[in-house]
Image (cartoon, rainbow, N blue to C red):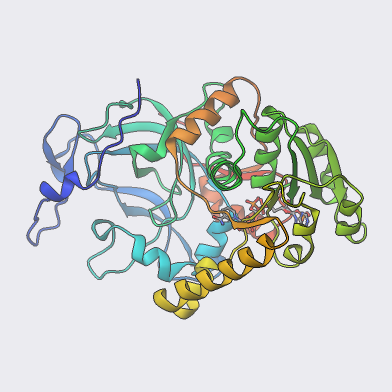
Length: 402
Ligand SMILES: NC(=O)C1=CN([C@@H]2O[C@H](COP(=O)(O)OP(=O)(O)OC[C@H]3O[C@@H](n4cnc5c(N)ncnc54)[C@H](OP(=O)(O)O)[C@@H]3O)[C@@H](O)[C@H]2O)C=CC1
Protein backbone atom coordinates (compact mmCIF):
# COMPACT_ATOMS: atom_id res chain seq x y z
CA UNK A 1 0.00 0.00 0.00
CA UNK A 2 1.31 3.45 -0.89
CA UNK A 3 1.81 6.14 1.66
CA UNK A 4 -0.80 8.88 1.69
CA UNK A 5 0.48 12.23 2.89
CA UNK A 6 -2.16 13.78 5.08
CA UNK A 7 -2.25 17.49 5.71
CA UNK A 8 -2.24 18.21 9.41
CA UNK A 9 -4.13 21.41 8.68
CA UNK A 10 -7.26 19.28 8.32
CA UNK A 11 -7.42 19.38 12.04
CA UNK A 12 -7.77 23.14 12.19
CA UNK A 13 -11.21 22.72 10.63
CA UNK A 14 -12.13 20.14 13.19
CA UNK A 15 -10.34 21.53 16.18
CA UNK A 16 -11.91 20.73 19.49
CA UNK A 17 -12.38 23.30 22.15
CA UNK A 18 -12.17 21.59 25.45
CA UNK A 19 -13.26 24.11 28.01
CA UNK A 20 -11.41 23.93 31.23
CA UNK A 21 -11.56 20.23 32.02
CA UNK A 22 -8.63 17.87 32.35
CA UNK A 23 -10.01 15.37 29.88
CA UNK A 24 -8.18 15.33 26.55
CA UNK A 25 -9.88 14.41 23.27
CA UNK A 26 -8.41 11.88 20.86
CA UNK A 27 -9.24 11.40 17.17
CA UNK A 28 -8.97 7.69 16.60
CA UNK A 29 -9.46 5.21 13.78
CA UNK A 30 -13.06 4.33 14.48
CA UNK A 31 -13.93 7.97 13.85
CA UNK A 32 -14.97 8.63 17.39
CA UNK A 33 -13.74 11.41 19.58
CA UNK A 34 -12.64 9.52 22.61
CA UNK A 35 -11.42 10.83 25.91
CA UNK A 36 -8.61 8.96 27.53
CA UNK A 37 -10.56 8.61 30.73
CA UNK A 38 -13.37 6.88 28.87
CA UNK A 39 -11.01 4.62 26.95
CA UNK A 40 -11.26 1.45 28.93
CA UNK A 41 -8.18 -0.04 27.30
CA UNK A 42 -5.53 2.08 28.87
CA UNK A 43 -4.46 4.35 31.66
CA UNK A 44 -4.03 8.12 31.41
CA UNK A 45 -0.46 7.84 32.64
CA UNK A 46 2.63 5.88 31.69
CA UNK A 47 6.19 5.20 32.79
CA UNK A 48 8.85 7.50 31.41
CA UNK A 49 12.19 9.16 32.07
CA UNK A 50 11.63 12.92 32.06
CA UNK A 51 13.52 16.09 32.80
CA UNK A 52 11.89 19.05 34.61
CA UNK A 53 14.76 21.45 33.95
CA UNK A 54 17.96 21.49 31.90
CA UNK A 55 21.22 20.30 33.44
CA UNK A 56 23.54 17.36 33.95
CA UNK A 57 22.56 13.72 34.40
CA UNK A 58 20.99 14.44 37.80
CA UNK A 59 17.97 16.07 36.09
CA UNK A 60 16.82 12.72 34.69
CA UNK A 61 13.78 11.56 36.66
CA UNK A 62 11.88 8.28 36.43
CA UNK A 63 8.11 8.57 36.79
CA UNK A 64 5.09 6.31 36.57
CA UNK A 65 2.88 9.34 36.04
CA UNK A 66 3.94 10.84 32.71
CA UNK A 67 1.01 11.96 30.59
CA UNK A 68 -0.15 9.35 28.12
CA UNK A 69 0.27 10.67 24.55
CA UNK A 70 -2.83 11.76 22.66
CA UNK A 71 -3.70 11.66 18.97
CA UNK A 72 -4.50 15.29 18.17
CA UNK A 73 -4.39 15.05 14.38
CA UNK A 74 -5.92 12.46 12.04
CA UNK A 75 -2.54 11.54 10.53
CA UNK A 76 -0.98 10.55 13.85
CA UNK A 77 -0.24 7.17 15.40
CA UNK A 78 0.59 6.06 18.93
CA UNK A 79 3.54 3.67 19.12
CA UNK A 80 4.17 1.36 22.04
CA UNK A 81 7.91 1.61 22.59
CA UNK A 82 9.95 -1.58 22.76
CA UNK A 83 13.39 0.00 22.45
CA UNK A 84 14.77 3.54 22.34
CA UNK A 85 18.09 4.67 20.86
CA UNK A 86 20.20 7.49 22.29
CA UNK A 87 22.19 10.07 20.32
CA UNK A 88 24.63 12.88 21.19
CA UNK A 89 21.64 15.20 20.68
CA UNK A 90 19.98 13.74 23.80
CA UNK A 91 22.97 14.79 25.90
CA UNK A 92 22.88 18.27 24.35
CA UNK A 93 19.11 18.64 24.77
CA UNK A 94 19.34 17.51 28.39
CA UNK A 95 21.61 20.53 28.89
CA UNK A 96 19.23 22.93 27.12
CA UNK A 97 20.77 22.94 23.64
CA UNK A 98 18.30 24.15 21.05
CA UNK A 99 15.70 25.06 23.69
CA UNK A 100 14.76 28.43 22.16
CA UNK A 101 14.43 27.12 18.61
CA UNK A 102 12.66 23.90 19.57
CA UNK A 103 10.18 25.84 21.72
CA UNK A 104 9.01 27.60 18.55
CA UNK A 105 8.57 24.31 16.69
CA UNK A 106 6.58 22.55 19.42
CA UNK A 107 2.89 21.98 18.81
CA UNK A 108 0.92 24.16 21.27
CA UNK A 109 -1.34 21.16 21.89
CA UNK A 110 1.62 19.15 23.19
CA UNK A 111 2.94 21.56 25.81
CA UNK A 112 1.57 22.07 29.31
CA UNK A 113 -0.85 24.77 30.41
CA UNK A 114 1.96 26.99 31.67
CA UNK A 115 3.42 26.97 28.17
CA UNK A 116 6.50 25.02 29.28
CA UNK A 117 8.06 22.05 27.49
CA UNK A 118 8.56 20.28 30.85
CA UNK A 119 8.31 17.50 31.79
CA UNK A 120 10.34 16.74 28.68
CA UNK A 121 10.94 13.21 27.42
CA UNK A 122 14.23 12.61 25.55
CA UNK A 123 15.11 9.76 23.14
CA UNK A 124 15.10 10.23 19.37
CA UNK A 125 14.92 6.62 18.14
CA UNK A 126 12.05 4.24 18.57
CA UNK A 127 11.29 0.69 17.59
CA UNK A 128 7.93 -0.61 18.69
CA UNK A 129 4.38 -1.53 17.77
CA UNK A 130 1.51 0.63 16.49
CA UNK A 131 -1.11 0.83 19.19
CA UNK A 132 -3.60 3.30 17.77
CA UNK A 133 -4.07 5.11 14.44
CA UNK A 134 -5.63 8.46 13.62
CA UNK A 135 -8.63 8.68 11.33
CA UNK A 136 -6.67 9.24 8.11
CA UNK A 137 -3.93 6.69 8.63
CA UNK A 138 -4.23 3.88 6.13
CA UNK A 139 -0.58 2.81 5.73
CA UNK A 140 -0.38 1.39 9.29
CA UNK A 141 -2.69 -0.59 11.52
CA UNK A 142 -2.57 -1.49 15.21
CA UNK A 143 -0.10 -4.31 15.78
CA UNK A 144 2.32 -3.29 12.98
CA UNK A 145 5.97 -3.34 14.02
CA UNK A 146 7.48 0.05 13.21
CA UNK A 147 10.54 2.23 13.68
CA UNK A 148 10.99 5.98 13.54
CA UNK A 149 13.33 8.89 14.16
CA UNK A 150 11.54 11.37 16.40
CA UNK A 151 11.97 15.09 15.62
CA UNK A 152 13.59 16.93 18.54
CA UNK A 153 10.55 19.18 18.98
CA UNK A 154 8.38 16.17 19.91
CA UNK A 155 8.26 14.11 23.10
CA UNK A 156 10.78 11.27 22.83
CA UNK A 157 10.95 7.52 23.17
CA UNK A 158 12.21 7.08 26.75
CA UNK A 159 8.62 6.25 27.66
CA UNK A 160 6.14 3.46 27.24
CA UNK A 161 4.33 5.24 24.38
CA UNK A 162 5.01 8.02 21.90
CA UNK A 163 2.77 9.84 19.42
CA UNK A 164 4.11 10.57 15.93
CA UNK A 165 2.94 11.65 12.53
CA UNK A 166 2.47 8.61 10.28
CA UNK A 167 4.76 10.32 7.77
CA UNK A 168 7.62 9.98 10.27
CA UNK A 169 7.04 6.26 10.86
CA UNK A 170 8.07 3.24 8.79
CA UNK A 171 7.61 -0.52 8.98
CA UNK A 172 10.53 -1.96 10.93
CA UNK A 173 12.89 -4.30 9.05
CA UNK A 174 11.64 -7.83 9.65
CA UNK A 175 15.17 -9.13 10.07
CA UNK A 176 15.99 -6.90 13.07
CA UNK A 177 15.07 -7.20 16.73
CA UNK A 178 13.58 -4.09 18.32
CA UNK A 179 16.90 -3.36 20.04
CA UNK A 180 18.83 -3.48 16.78
CA UNK A 181 16.12 -1.51 14.97
CA UNK A 182 16.21 1.27 17.59
CA UNK A 183 19.88 1.86 16.80
CA UNK A 184 19.29 3.07 13.26
CA UNK A 185 16.47 5.56 12.50
CA UNK A 186 17.97 8.86 13.72
CA UNK A 187 21.42 8.28 12.26
CA UNK A 188 19.91 6.81 9.08
CA UNK A 189 17.58 9.80 8.60
CA UNK A 190 20.50 12.17 9.26
CA UNK A 191 22.90 10.42 6.89
CA UNK A 192 20.15 10.19 4.27
CA UNK A 193 19.33 13.87 4.56
CA UNK A 194 23.03 14.87 4.44
CA UNK A 195 24.20 12.53 1.70
CA UNK A 196 21.10 12.23 -0.48
CA UNK A 197 19.18 15.50 -0.07
CA UNK A 198 22.21 17.76 0.45
CA UNK A 199 25.11 15.75 -0.99
CA UNK A 200 23.18 14.67 -4.11
CA UNK A 201 24.12 10.98 -3.84
CA UNK A 202 21.69 8.13 -4.45
CA UNK A 203 21.72 4.45 -5.36
CA UNK A 204 21.91 5.22 -9.09
CA UNK A 205 24.75 7.77 -9.15
CA UNK A 206 27.13 6.69 -6.37
CA UNK A 207 29.09 3.93 -8.13
CA UNK A 208 32.72 4.96 -8.42
CA UNK A 209 32.13 8.19 -6.50
CA UNK A 210 34.82 8.80 -3.91
CA UNK A 211 33.35 9.71 -0.52
CA UNK A 212 35.25 10.71 2.62
CA UNK A 213 33.58 10.30 6.02
CA UNK A 214 35.28 12.26 8.79
CA UNK A 215 34.41 10.40 12.00
CA UNK A 216 33.31 6.96 10.77
CA UNK A 217 33.12 4.99 14.02
CA UNK A 218 30.05 6.61 15.64
CA UNK A 219 26.35 6.33 14.89
CA UNK A 220 26.13 8.41 11.72
CA UNK A 221 29.45 7.11 10.37
CA UNK A 222 28.75 3.41 10.82
CA UNK A 223 25.43 3.80 9.01
CA UNK A 224 26.79 6.07 6.24
CA UNK A 225 29.64 3.68 5.39
CA UNK A 226 27.19 0.82 4.83
CA UNK A 227 24.68 2.84 2.81
CA UNK A 228 27.38 4.22 0.51
CA UNK A 229 29.03 0.84 0.04
CA UNK A 230 25.70 -0.74 -0.86
CA UNK A 231 25.38 1.96 -3.56
CA UNK A 232 28.85 1.15 -4.94
CA UNK A 233 30.77 4.22 -3.72
CA UNK A 234 34.44 4.12 -2.73
CA UNK A 235 34.51 5.07 0.97
CA UNK A 236 37.43 6.52 2.93
CA UNK A 237 36.98 6.91 6.68
CA UNK A 238 38.85 8.69 9.46
CA UNK A 239 38.65 7.18 12.95
CA UNK A 240 40.78 6.13 15.92
CA UNK A 241 43.15 3.22 15.36
CA UNK A 242 41.08 0.92 17.61
CA UNK A 243 37.98 1.47 15.44
CA UNK A 244 39.69 0.41 12.20
CA UNK A 245 38.52 -3.19 12.49
CA UNK A 246 34.92 -2.03 12.98
CA UNK A 247 34.78 0.33 10.01
CA UNK A 248 36.61 -2.08 7.69
CA UNK A 249 34.09 -4.74 8.68
CA UNK A 250 31.33 -2.38 7.54
CA UNK A 251 32.99 -2.01 4.14
CA UNK A 252 35.30 1.04 4.39
CA UNK A 253 37.90 0.87 1.60
CA UNK A 254 40.53 3.21 3.05
CA UNK A 255 40.91 3.99 6.74
CA UNK A 256 43.00 6.82 8.16
CA UNK A 257 43.82 6.92 11.87
CA UNK A 258 43.33 10.51 13.00
CA UNK A 259 45.20 9.91 16.26
CA UNK A 260 48.51 9.11 14.52
CA UNK A 261 49.65 12.54 13.43
CA UNK A 262 48.06 15.22 11.20
CA UNK A 263 45.21 13.44 9.46
CA UNK A 264 44.95 16.00 6.66
CA UNK A 265 48.51 15.24 5.54
CA UNK A 266 47.65 11.57 5.01
CA UNK A 267 44.37 12.41 3.30
CA UNK A 268 46.18 14.76 0.89
CA UNK A 269 48.20 11.79 -0.41
CA UNK A 270 44.95 10.14 -1.60
CA UNK A 271 42.98 10.82 -4.78
CA UNK A 272 40.55 13.73 -4.28
CA UNK A 273 36.92 13.21 -3.26
CA UNK A 274 33.47 13.86 -4.77
CA UNK A 275 31.67 14.21 -1.43
CA UNK A 276 32.84 14.69 2.16
CA UNK A 277 30.54 14.01 5.12
CA UNK A 278 31.94 15.76 8.19
CA UNK A 279 30.75 14.34 11.54
CA UNK A 280 33.50 16.14 13.47
CA UNK A 281 33.48 19.85 12.58
CA UNK A 282 35.64 22.58 14.10
CA UNK A 283 39.23 22.39 12.79
CA UNK A 284 38.26 20.01 9.98
CA UNK A 285 36.60 22.84 8.03
CA UNK A 286 39.98 24.54 7.63
CA UNK A 287 41.49 21.76 5.54
CA UNK A 288 38.76 19.34 4.41
CA UNK A 289 37.44 21.32 1.44
CA UNK A 290 40.84 21.25 -0.24
CA UNK A 291 40.45 17.46 -0.46
CA UNK A 292 37.53 17.83 -2.92
CA UNK A 293 37.84 17.59 -6.71
CA UNK A 294 37.54 21.23 -7.90
CA UNK A 295 35.05 22.33 -10.56
CA UNK A 296 33.27 18.95 -10.64
CA UNK A 297 30.26 19.75 -8.44
CA UNK A 298 32.02 18.19 -5.43
CA UNK A 299 30.35 18.84 -2.06
CA UNK A 300 31.44 19.14 1.56
CA UNK A 301 28.52 18.54 3.97
CA UNK A 302 29.04 19.16 7.66
CA UNK A 303 26.66 17.99 10.38
CA UNK A 304 28.32 20.20 12.97
CA UNK A 305 26.70 23.60 12.56
CA UNK A 306 26.09 26.60 14.85
CA UNK A 307 22.44 26.82 13.77
CA UNK A 308 20.65 25.98 17.06
CA UNK A 309 23.36 27.55 19.23
CA UNK A 310 23.05 30.85 17.34
CA UNK A 311 19.31 30.99 17.92
CA UNK A 312 19.70 29.96 21.57
CA UNK A 313 22.23 32.71 22.22
CA UNK A 314 21.01 35.52 19.96
CA UNK A 315 17.28 34.91 19.76
CA UNK A 316 15.31 33.97 16.68
CA UNK A 317 15.80 37.00 14.42
CA UNK A 318 19.46 37.70 15.19
CA UNK A 319 20.29 34.00 15.37
CA UNK A 320 18.76 33.32 11.96
CA UNK A 321 20.50 36.36 10.54
CA UNK A 322 23.86 35.26 11.96
CA UNK A 323 23.30 31.75 10.63
CA UNK A 324 22.40 32.97 7.14
CA UNK A 325 25.44 35.26 7.02
CA UNK A 326 27.79 32.51 8.23
CA UNK A 327 26.61 29.87 5.78
CA UNK A 328 26.41 32.28 2.85
CA UNK A 329 29.92 33.61 3.51
CA UNK A 330 31.38 30.13 3.69
CA UNK A 331 29.48 28.88 0.64
CA UNK A 332 30.62 31.92 -1.41
CA UNK A 333 34.22 31.60 -0.30
CA UNK A 334 34.39 27.97 -1.40
CA UNK A 335 32.39 28.27 -4.62
CA UNK A 336 35.12 30.57 -5.94
CA UNK A 337 37.47 27.58 -5.48
CA UNK A 338 35.10 25.29 -7.38
CA UNK A 339 33.68 23.29 -4.45
CA UNK A 340 30.37 23.43 -2.58
CA UNK A 341 30.08 24.04 1.14
CA UNK A 342 26.84 22.84 2.78
CA UNK A 343 25.27 22.25 6.19
CA UNK A 344 23.50 18.93 6.77
CA UNK A 345 20.62 18.38 9.15
CA UNK A 346 18.55 15.54 10.49
CA UNK A 347 15.21 15.37 8.66
CA UNK A 348 12.45 13.02 9.84
CA UNK A 349 11.27 10.84 6.98
CA UNK A 350 9.20 7.66 7.02
CA UNK A 351 9.69 7.18 3.25
CA UNK A 352 13.51 7.34 3.62
CA UNK A 353 13.26 4.76 6.42
CA UNK A 354 11.14 2.56 4.12
CA UNK A 355 14.12 2.46 1.72
CA UNK A 356 16.56 1.81 4.57
CA UNK A 357 14.29 -0.98 5.85
CA UNK A 358 14.53 -2.71 2.46
CA UNK A 359 18.31 -2.36 2.48
CA UNK A 360 18.48 -3.89 5.97
CA UNK A 361 16.26 -6.83 5.03
CA UNK A 362 18.37 -7.35 1.90
CA UNK A 363 21.40 -7.76 4.19
CA UNK A 364 23.10 -4.58 2.96
CA UNK A 365 23.00 -2.72 6.26
CA UNK A 366 23.38 -4.07 9.76
CA UNK A 367 22.80 -2.55 13.16
CA UNK A 368 25.90 -1.61 15.18
CA UNK A 369 24.82 -1.68 18.82
CA UNK A 370 27.72 -0.93 21.14
CA UNK A 371 25.83 -1.49 24.39
CA UNK A 372 22.29 -2.17 25.56
CA UNK A 373 20.78 -0.84 28.82
CA UNK A 374 17.57 -1.66 30.68
CA UNK A 375 14.89 1.02 31.27
CA UNK A 376 16.05 1.30 34.89
CA UNK A 377 19.56 2.10 33.66
CA UNK A 378 18.71 5.17 31.54
CA UNK A 379 21.06 7.49 33.51
CA UNK A 380 23.91 5.00 32.91
CA UNK A 381 23.06 4.95 29.20
CA UNK A 382 23.32 8.76 29.14
CA UNK A 383 26.69 8.59 30.95
CA UNK A 384 27.94 6.18 28.32
CA UNK A 385 26.90 8.43 25.41
CA UNK A 386 28.31 11.48 27.18
CA UNK A 387 31.75 9.86 27.50
CA UNK A 388 32.02 9.90 23.69
CA UNK A 389 34.26 7.52 21.71
CA UNK A 390 31.17 5.80 20.36
CA UNK A 391 31.55 2.56 18.44
CA UNK A 392 28.05 2.42 16.99
CA UNK A 393 24.96 3.04 19.15
CA UNK A 394 23.57 2.87 22.67
CA UNK A 395 20.08 1.39 23.02
CA UNK A 396 17.64 1.21 25.95
CA UNK A 397 15.15 -1.65 26.23
CA UNK A 398 11.85 -0.11 27.31
CA UNK A 399 9.63 -3.18 27.27
CA UNK A 400 9.91 -6.70 25.94
CA UNK A 401 6.18 -7.47 25.79
CA UNK A 402 3.83 -6.40 23.03
N1 LIG B 1 23.07 18.59 12.20
C1 LIG B 1 22.29 17.58 12.58
O1 LIG B 1 21.05 17.60 12.36
C2 LIG B 1 22.92 16.41 13.25
C3 LIG B 1 24.19 16.52 13.75
N2 LIG B 1 24.80 15.44 14.33
C4 LIG B 1 26.16 15.63 14.81
O2 LIG B 1 27.01 14.80 14.02
C5 LIG B 1 28.08 14.35 14.80
C6 LIG B 1 28.21 12.84 14.67
O3 LIG B 1 27.07 12.22 15.27
P1 LIG B 1 27.15 10.70 15.74
O4 LIG B 1 27.80 9.86 14.72
O5 LIG B 1 25.82 10.32 16.22
O6 LIG B 1 28.18 10.85 16.99
P2 LIG B 1 28.90 9.72 17.82
O7 LIG B 1 29.22 10.28 19.15
O8 LIG B 1 28.11 8.47 17.72
O9 LIG B 1 30.27 9.46 17.02
C7 LIG B 1 31.32 10.35 16.92
C8 LIG B 1 32.56 9.49 16.53
O10 LIG B 1 33.63 10.32 16.08
C9 LIG B 1 34.86 9.80 16.59
N3 LIG B 1 35.80 10.91 16.59
C10 LIG B 1 35.94 11.88 17.53
N4 LIG B 1 36.85 12.79 17.11
C11 LIG B 1 37.26 12.40 15.87
C12 LIG B 1 38.15 12.96 14.90
N5 LIG B 1 38.82 14.09 15.14
N6 LIG B 1 38.30 12.31 13.73
C13 LIG B 1 37.64 11.15 13.48
N7 LIG B 1 36.78 10.57 14.34
C14 LIG B 1 36.59 11.20 15.53
C15 LIG B 1 34.47 9.25 17.95
O11 LIG B 1 35.33 8.20 18.42
P3 LIG B 1 36.78 8.49 19.07
O12 LIG B 1 36.65 9.73 19.94
O13 LIG B 1 37.10 7.28 19.92
O14 LIG B 1 37.73 8.65 17.93
C16 LIG B 1 33.10 8.67 17.68
O15 LIG B 1 33.19 7.33 17.23
C17 LIG B 1 27.82 14.82 16.24
O16 LIG B 1 28.55 16.00 16.46
C18 LIG B 1 26.34 15.13 16.23
O17 LIG B 1 26.01 16.11 17.19
C19 LIG B 1 24.18 14.23 14.40
C20 LIG B 1 22.90 14.08 13.95
C21 LIG B 1 22.14 15.16 13.39
